[in-house]
Length: 318
Image (cartoon, rainbow, N blue to C red; front, side, top):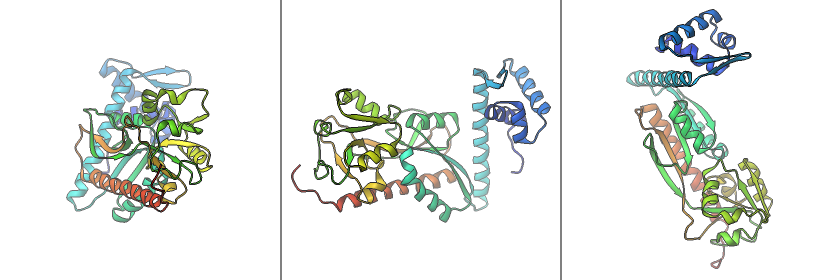
C-alpha cells in the first residue's frame, strides 16, 4: 500500500497538530506550506468549525480539531491493520504495533519482548511508550496505542483485557534489612522503618492513600518520588522499605539484590498486571502475536524474580 488511504487533509491536520505550526508540518511532510494551509481552511469550511487557534507562535487544536485529529489517527491505525491483514493473506506476519507499558517494564519485560519479536517475527516493528496506567488507557482510547501492559487495570467497557495475573501486594527491601528474612509483614511493621513511596500518578500509591492514609503522616520518615529507579536505589541502600510489586523490581529480585516480602494485612488487596487493547477494534494477527510474546515476557520476568527470591531462604518464623 504505497499510497495512504487517509485523505491528505486529515494527514496534514494531524501533522500540524504534532508539529505545532504549518511551516514545521510542511518541512516534515515535504509539502508546500500553502497547500497544507489551503487544505485545512477547506476542511474547516466543510465542517463549519475552526480546527485550530491561530497563536502568535503556532497553532493549537480546538475541541473540534482534537476530535478530528483523533478520527484521523484511528483511521491511520485502521490503515496499518489493513496492510497487515493483506500481508497476512500473502503469508507474512508484518506490520507495526505501538505498545504503552509501565516504566518498570523497561529493565525487565521489554528487552525480552523486543529480542523475541526480532528473532521470531523480524517483519513486525514495535514502538514503545512508557507511562502510568492512566496514560496507557488514554492512549488506547485516543488511538495512539494498539496495546497496553498496565498495572491495576480498572474495569472499562471500552477496554478488553487479553490476559491478567495477580501480583501479591508487598514491599521490597535489601537482603541486609531487618525485614528481609520475614515471610510476611504487616503495614504497621513495615512503616516502622523509613519508607520510599512512588508518586500519586501510580495506581498502587492511590490505593495506599485511600486504604492506609496513616502511612503518609508527615511525622514519619518517608521519601517520595515519581522515579521508580530512584526509590529502588534507596531500597538497595539497605535503609528504606518500598511498597511495590514483584514485577516492579523483577531484575533486582532475580539477582538477589532485593527481597520481596508480602504484606499480610487482611485488607491488602493483590495488585494486577494486565495486557489490554481497545475493545472496539478487531484483534488482528500481528497484534495477537505481540500480545502473546508480551505475556510470555511478563511471565518469564515474574518466574525469574521468584526464582531469585527462593535462593534466599527465610526462617520459618516472621
